[in-house]
Amino acid sequence: MRKMNENTLANLLSLSEVLLATGGRLLNPTYNEEDFVFTSITIDSRNCVEGSFFVPLVGNLDGHDFILSAAENGAKSVFVSDFYAKFHEKEIASFINSGLCLISVSHTMYALQNMAAYYVEKFPKLKKVAITGSSGKTTTKEILVSLLQKKYKTVYNEGNLNSETGLPLSVFNIRDEHEWAVFEMGMNRRGEIRELAQVLKPNIAIITNIGSAHIGNLGTKDLIAEEKKSIFSFFETSSIAIIPVFDEYSEYLQINTKGQIVLYGNYETLQIRAVKDRGLEGSVFLMEDQEISFPLYGSFNFLNALAALHCAKIAGLAINEIKRGLEELRPSFGRAEIFNGEIAIVQDCYNANPESMNASIEYFETLHWEGRKILILADMLELGFDSETQHRLVGKKLKTLSFDMIFLLGSQMDWAYEELLKGHDTDEDGDGKNEEKIYYNAFISDADFGNAVNDILVHVNKGDLLLLKGSRGMKLERISEKLIKTFNMQGCVEC
Image (cartoon, one colour):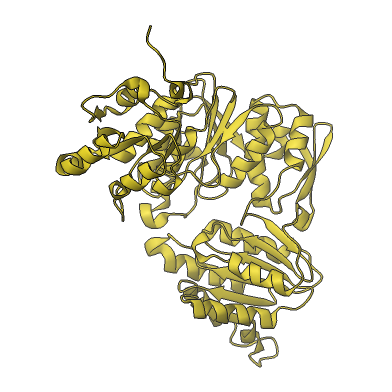
């Protein structure tokens, strides 16, 4: 009788399955499949542990250069590209002699995706939810996960591992005990959403909105809508598309979409009534016979909750499970975080695009606050050729609103600064003092950062409320850290 290696039981896939899924070619001239080990997977050699499968990607760096490092950290199996295998025979022989299992594939990233798709197919009973959109997808995912976990064993992608590599890596966290899976899908190039949908083949897909995020990569909102719609590419008649009814592309997203269509955005369809805004504490509403507190502020976050609630109802959650799922929700880093102390900080700096920027500053202006309200806004990245137009529109928007002080940070916010100054040459008294409420710093070097922080610290007083909003690359949390140390702040409020 053939003896099974003890590692085989923990393997995510067998060697035969990997070769079948990827069309790969085993380079080891003699290899016993019973010795194959694949207990985790990574694209970063530093993250390899005993039993890892290492996938070297080729980009600014060539991942093949780190195969030795991956092996030293515990990797047992490695993809290599056909091109690398052809022109690096000496290195290939050395890796094989060291005991590595080498599989040659035409393209390592696509091999990762194909292997992930094969792995997902091993769980036919798993209910799979995919979420995409220009903004709000991570928040919607976290709301939905908080809901589903009250009834089901749920697996989901951590943080924003939603890319062409992040999602395939994440699906390898699926195990037999999981009943529901929730994965968000991001996009930086045309065709990426379809690739991710092919990996997951979701039963349910949610589109949060169609906005201008990543317009620099695709060119127009029409093309963004087309790309986002491809999340439905592998739908069957039993699949469910959850689409925002008030989005300008709502009708387009419904055209020729296979399966059932659920429109969200109207409270009544979920039997929600008596919605009350509680400012930074979120909102409270009645659903069926329950009063429910939702801890994230703003109508934009409430809209994300409506999308998640439709999915929760489809999943069969009872009202008591829905209530616990929403009320136990906690904000994640950079998304609706609130810090309280001698001042209050709203830290919303994980993502910024024109839609989310405008929604945040509009809400912030209407928010009741006894003290002063101060904006700290930084560049919206990845807008490409549309960046100047969109940043100027932010400046024009700010001219229509009322704030006690505005700090604009980043080279692209210079356009917003120019527009804003056009409306603030003089104040009501005609003495030009309103201009003193507006500050700009290019925020390029460490010295610029220090100067910007010093300007902010000088002008912030006890009792002020600050909104920090900008793209992740601007790292606005560095400002929060300085303010927290200065103003006797508490940690993130569990709203």
